[in-house]
View: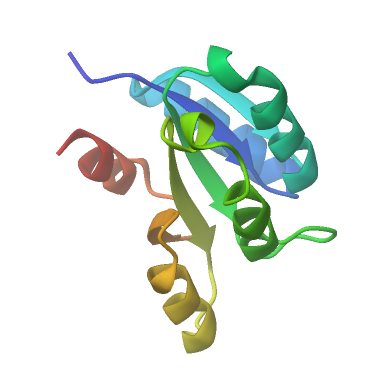
Length: 129
């Protein structure tokens, strides 16, 4: 049986949120999927759930209006340790800007930068192996 994870998806594209949610559930790796089209809303959710959060995998879009992926990470880093230790963040982007790639790789909070469109096979390999 495939390992199942709780996911939070953060992306300003309703289409991407819909597709990724369906792919994650259909693949069998998603126990639950909570989509957010606003990074700020996702941060507020994490802070409000606090101790009640299960272990979560966050798929975070880089380019978003309002609060982008890096701004989310800056605020995420301010959350209490008991919240942060339950969360694994993978940034999603179609960027070819080496500054963005280097910044993502340098962040202690970002496990990896994954290319858009997200390939479920790649995600399964990363999470399960």
